[in-house]
Image 1 (cartoon, protein in one colour):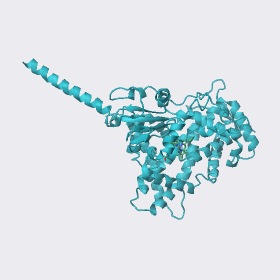
Image 2 (cartoon, rainbow, N blue to C red; image 1 turned 90 degrees about the horizontal axis):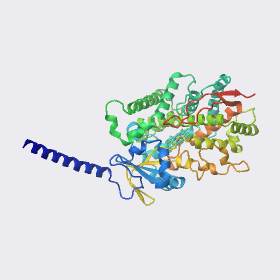
Image 3 (cartoon, rainbow, N blue to C red; image 1 turned 90 degrees about the vertical axis):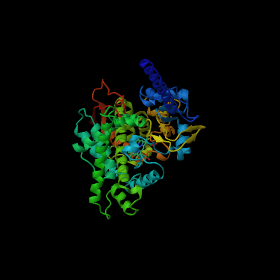
Image 4 (cartoon, rainbow, N blue to C red; image 1 turned 60 degrees about the vertical axis):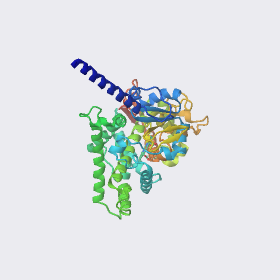
Amino acid sequence: MELDSLLSFNGVTLAIFVVLLVLLIRWFNQWPANIPPSPPGYPIVGHIPLMLKGKPQDIYRGLRPKYGDVFSLKLGRRLSVIINGSEALREAFIKQAEDFSDRPDIFLMSVLLKKKGIAASSGEHWKRTRTLALSTLRGFGFGKKSLEGRVLEEAEAFLSVIEKQNGTPYSATSIIQVMISNIICSIVFGERFDYDDNKFKKLLDMLEELGRLNPIAGVMNVIPWIRYLPGDIIGMKKFARLFQTIFDFIQEEIAEHKRTYDEDNLRDFIDAFLRQKSKHDLDDPVFDDFNIEASVLNLFVAGTGTTASTTQWAILFLLHHRDIQNKLRDEISTVVGSGRYPSLNDKPNMPFYEAFITEVIRKGNIAPLSVPHGATNDIQFRGMTIPKGSLITANLDSVLNDPDTFTDPDKFDPYRFLGEDGQLTGKEKSVMAFSLGRRVCLGESLARLELFLILTSLVQRFDLVPEDPDCLPTLLPVPGATLPQPYKFRALKRT
Ligand code: HEM
């Protein structure tokens, strides 16, 4: 009798379990009928196991031939839509910009940045914040010729550190970071830091580590509850701690600006923002403290790592391709000579430099998947439905490494952008590394100015040779990141 009741109890339990499991699977698999095509996935976890197999851009390269320019992956209950190729990207991010310009509800944007600032906000709040930030930056030379002097000053400080090494093998990673960061710091905080300021260098190391831990943020986007588990299984708490330390630095800078603020002497971006705040309603969300802090953080973070990595890639490619380095130097000699620093006025006469830097940006591929976008409403696109809440990825890698546009895309070859007459053919415009549409990188003009002045003055003054000519530094990036692995080089002063 007892056995009977036990068996029947277990039978009921099993039946309930099966029903719940079926309901759960159905709930997880409930998507609108015409979402973008996707490969077969597992129940509940969907394509999470697929995404664990390698770098996302490599996985996407493999899926595109079969599933087309717009496909989707199910990451648990969240749909991730990947847009590939310049045609589909333009159609989405330019023609349908109203639908495709928002940020998604993910850990970094919603929890750490509270959907504030330039990079994490959406809708009207984002439009106002970005417009205000840009106009304030313009007041401090952004996008104007006057910025040139500031960048050159920093380039000179960098070159004098390089010169002091007297041609001995040297890893420039750390001073490149300080140099690039100093440029955005001088605009935003009105101050620069010494190249041997250990406190600042430590902060920049943290920033780099944050970049390397970025895949963790990816896990959090898909399994948000993982952060409530004890311990720090995926390193998320470390990520949040690093983020907070950098945020504390920004908050301290802003607090110091408030203490020493003088309306008649606006020193920098922060002062100008504080002045705007004093002219607006106290409860205007664009001027609330967190929105200002997050905007300053965005400029500091985005203005440091990206251009520093690109500079490191550029030097690495110059070490690997001495012929290209010599050709670049010939162009600098002809157009600029050796008696003065290159200037922006020279740039239109330097097509080989333009071809070289475009190829560095293409091959460096430092933001292959851009910054995540998100659907804040159901979106109809090319006859498909992208449901509200989906993650949207602008797969820039699909353009930068498209074999139909760039023959042999794995090869570093600046000549692909030049015609027989040595002039640019217009193909350089297809390198969409700064993204596109309304959210296109806000710092593109600054990044291009920095790269031009720093790299041309470096090549003008120094012959860059590898530490060991028989063993060139690797071209593989730091695993899981897009920056090059640390390397040393010799900079031999040219007479
Ligand atoms: C080689 C250097 C750089 C590259 C390749 C790069 C690339 C990008 C990309 C791909 C995005 C995402 C756009 C999107 O969401 O669709 C972005 C956004 C952004 N970048 Fe850059 N960037 C670079 C340098 C800079 C610099 C120097 C600054 C400094 C001011 C900067 C500030 C920003 C900001 C604030 C955003 C967010 C824009 C928004 O959400 O409205 N970037 N960048």
